[in-house]
Length: 302
Image 1 (tube, rainbow, N blue to C red):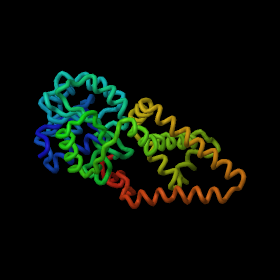
Image 2: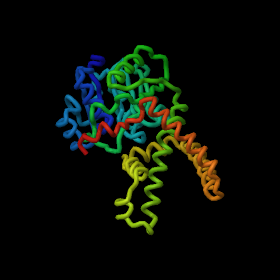
Image 3: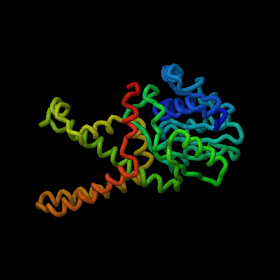
Image 4: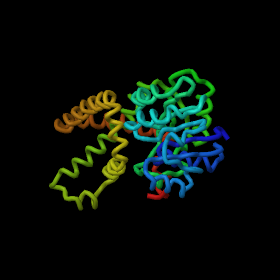
């Protein structure tokens, strides 16, 4: 057992997967959860994501050793303000948000000096959301990134041990660098996927039935990504604006270069470009990151 009591604030895919694994492996004495919706709380309890649920976040964090904020980035400030006065001295507060600088600015001011705040981000997920979507293998061989704001060695080590027990590989980096990295690896690709699906929807020369019937692998991957939680991704883009716009600017430059090569028949440029980018895919495979978390979740409730 790593923590006596863990509080999960928000009970969606990430929180549900944490709760299932923690309870199955005995990593905490008790898991307490809360969500705004009574239906979500009932589902979480019936699925065994938590030992008990509470109606408010303030109740959930009472006497918790670890509090994990699993709400959209845009809700972090309000939740932190609610729980701040109710945290026990020495508790650790962390989160699973895809953006770190905005979370630090939103949460930090509401926490006392006697609380350890360790912003974090598990690089795991599927296109599904809600308490029905959680499954205990979600974090297997995924990366978990810490962006510590102080040298709380004992608290950081303890949180690291938890995430390693959940199956994750743990690393640390500075918050602004994190936001740039995930803009490349996650945020911009999601926006491009949303855009491509939107283009197909707007292209009236291709009927809806043709888009669905003749979807090739690439477009199916786009639609899977574009099925992700719209609230979460709205907040991600609004709160990681600068890094995402920088990467999209670079993407536009690359796209123009490829357009020029296609227009001018520059086959050598296209071949060199595709060869270079294929090597990146091979590197992902060699690093063991080619099995998408969604592969584990296909048997999870939809």
